[in-house]
Length: 353
Image 1: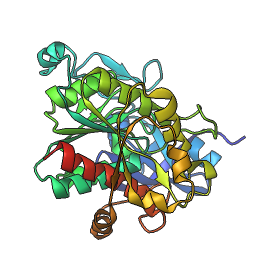
Image 2: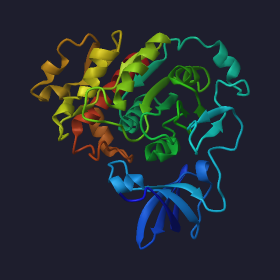
Image 3: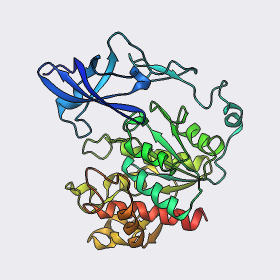
Image 4: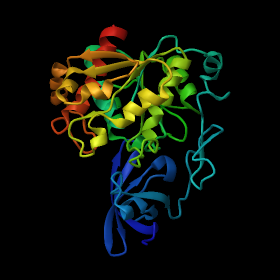
C-alpha cells in the first residue's frame, strides 16, 4: 500500500479563482496538486508541502490530483476570519466561518424572521454538471434574473474546486453562491439546506435558486448508496418552506452503465421513494427516442411537462462554457443536456416571466 501522505516540493504554480494548481515533485516523480489558499495559504515555487495523495494512488475518477494539507513553515487552517460555525468539524482541518444565520451576521435578523420561500422557484438536481447549461440558458431567456447557486456537501467540499462556478460568476450568470453543511467557500455560508434556501431568498435576493452538489458524486452501484439521493431530501425541503420544487432529471443515452440510460435509476429512486408530494418534472421530447421511456415513467405521480429542446440545445453548442458530464460533452451525450434544457425552458416560460 502506497503512503497516502507525502512531502513534495512545488515546482510550478498556476493560480485559479479560489485555488492553485501546482506541479510538485515527490522524490523521483512529478505530479499535479491542488492547493486552496483558504485552507493552506498561498503556495510558491520551492515551498515544501504536505500532500494527501490518496486520490492518485487509488486512480479515482475525481482524482488525478494530490491535495495540499500544509505548507512547511506557514501552517494554518480553514479561515482565520470571524464566525463561530465550524466546518470540517473534529478533523485536523476544521476551521470557523461566519454563517449567515449567526448573530454577528448582517443577515441574522432577516433569517431569524424568515419562515417561507414565498413561492421561490428552486431547481434541484443530482450532478454539478447541470449547473453551467442551466445558468446559460436561463440567462439567455431571462436576462437580469438573479440566479443563486446553493452547493451541498454531497461532492467536493470547496466551492473553489468548481471551474464552472468561477466562469459563471465572471460572466455574470450567477448572482451569488451559498454553501451549506461541510461545503465551504460560498458568498454566504449556512448550516443546512433549510437555512441555505432561506438565505437564497431573504439574503441573496434570489429570483431563482438551483441546488446541486459540488463536482463529483459518491456512488456504489447500489440503489441507496449514493449521495445523488440528496435530491429528494432537498425537494422535500423546498416544499416544506413553501417554494416551487422543480426536479432536474438525470438523463443519458451514452452512459456505459445500463442503470443510468434514459432516466437514471438515481432520479427514479428520488421521485418514487423519497419525494413526498408531486413536484414539477420537465422532460425533453428527445427522451422519447429511447425505447424504454414509457416504462421508466410509468407510475410517476409528478407534474411531467414535455419540452421541445432542440433550439436550446443548439444554443448550448455556441456557448464558450465548460459543458461536460462524466467526461462526455454535448455531442457525446446529448440527452443529458436536453434534460437540463427542458428545465430551463419550463422555468423561464412558466415561472420566471
